[in-house]
Image (spheres, helix red, strand yellow):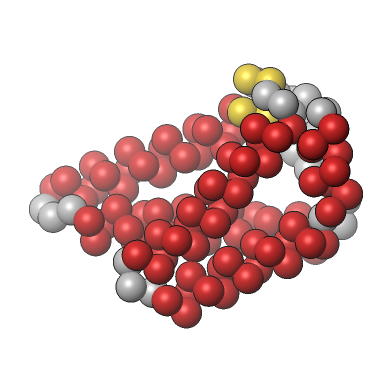
Length: 120
């Protein structure tokens, strides 16, 4: 596991959550904004944290709710690329493009993990 790619993934996770938060904030008004941001981020963080592949070397190896590798990969792509889309829909085009590009770079650099996930 390359340390720099793990660091990039952490940054991508935080950025993706930021994108969803910005979109939720811009989609609602008043007190609903706070509720929408908190609810969406709690949901996404929960999904990210509990649905895992047992023995995943990029995580602790623990899987509170074990899922096949293809399901985990799909979840990761939905969250990470969804965060880029959320930035785009919120009007932050450059941020969306940079985030999407970094997600692609991250997975290109980690092709062995993608193969591993798809074999699980």
